Length: 249
Image (cartoon, rainbow, N blue to C red; front, side, top):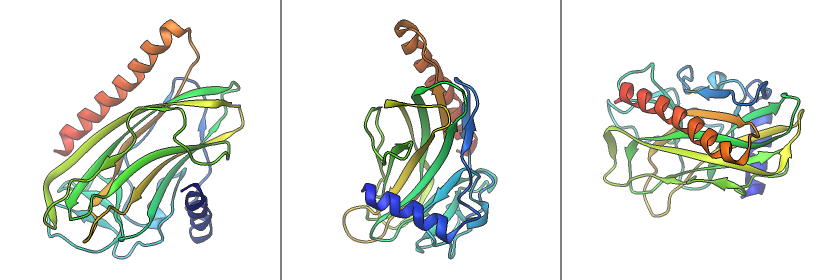
């Protein structure tokens, strides 16, 4: 899988040199960085800064509104349900391969970072006969993509059924802690990645994507305080997501 991830990143930089943006600067420990994709319009030009996307297919692309007619076209989409101002980054995958969305950061805190708290929502807008998957991994300082040191559930599988849009958005929230085996030194970069993969079986994949991403570089307090800090970071991020999901539903 790592070989394909690396190839995807290279292809993205070649196909969309104006889209493969620079790293997002981590300037302070404990600060939470967020992305809700509400400015993404389902085009290469509107992929948010500091993100790369491996898929070159934006046709038809654009905004896919699951409150309207079902469209069985593989593409990259800004996924919505009625409210076009509330969007997720997603796709309807072809029946082979995996597409990768990577968020790039650089450590500019002046100190090493050993731990990150990462949260995201997987949002499903349609169903089909393949259980499309969304999974998380990371690449620290160019060492290759991995799930080593990740605490928490990373994989989400789509619900399946008769080809159709869902009656409402199906949201699965994920929260993980990333414990780096080698601390990220100041000046080094890290990628957090989400792979949207073709599901097993026959037929087509779902319209599915990610939303409400958060990344927090966790300080190095005492062992006693560490657990409380982690719970506080994840709890605050999950509360933010629940409020966003209430608006969406």
